[in-house]
Image 1 (tube, rainbow, N blue to C red):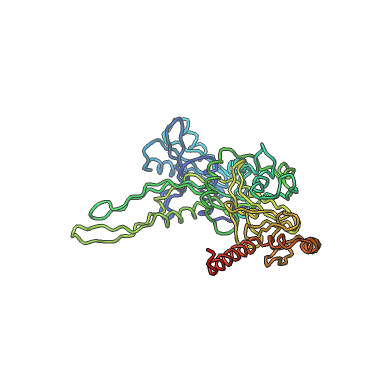
Image 2: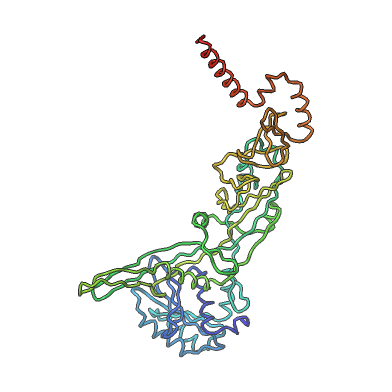
Length: 454
């Protein structure tokens, strides 16, 4: 356990807190560091339907003797808990024979406050068992579970094909195979209870009884709560995780990247407690005994907030890029099997303006590969096919702008236009032609009226 030798006693308690939380114990928390009364970490377990408290003494020393075990036995007896309770001593070193004999005798005599001993060797085996690695004096989160990066019942690029179905003038069969990459991003799902009562001389003025669950991006840097829809994606699929097998996914995706968890579970817990403190802090208005109105800021204590679970998992971020002639279209989303939350949609977006969103109509330009909104998509005069304003060659005929794929098409239409009879040329601008007819009719009516004919 040389890696832990440089830790302080408090830092060692953080390590042990991580270990027990990963072992599946509930309500894992540390006692007050200013006066712990022999209780460093408090945890709970449910055995045969009965909830039991476990008081854990952490000793970051080379040798632990019998007095430490005896002191913990007394602390268990005085610990306020409505139910059975037992103890545990955890050390990076070893226990003396008298300490082991005392703990064994408690168990053999069915003492209601039995004590379990875990030495450095036990701690190393437990860390290996639960997938935690000791490095740089900390326990790093090592998670091998991920949400599914794609729907196993469909192709990996099925989401891209679905997105392109909304684009007019292009068929899925005409699409090239996109470049597909997946980044496994670490997140933690935190569940915490906040229970606090605020009283004054007039009685209770505010209560908090709340269970909160949120998901946090867990890469290096400051933790950040994910968007609500991404959080829902994670929490609704935690039961359906798979092994993160980079070799297996490498056969499906062109690129595979796995990011590392940036902090320990205890650090995420501390951050979550601070965040919930801020979230639940509120100002309450009440009337005192003297009929005077008061304002009181109600901020829960750290001890009012109990982090129940911190569940690490990888969230796949899938990115497809499709090359169509002059343009590349990214499509990025968080995946959980067939479910996904879009992070970037470069398909439902006009390349010529800010128009975007799945509710807008878009058209593919086969001339340059652009996807354009209605304002930037025109009909090519010679071939009557879509062309975007970005690549089209233009010229005015009958005072109206016409759009062409290239100079060759423009030249061909010039020749065709020159050979047209006058009335066909006029129809190249139907609005102008129609207006001219209306003006002519009105002129005739005016002349006939002036001549007394009508």
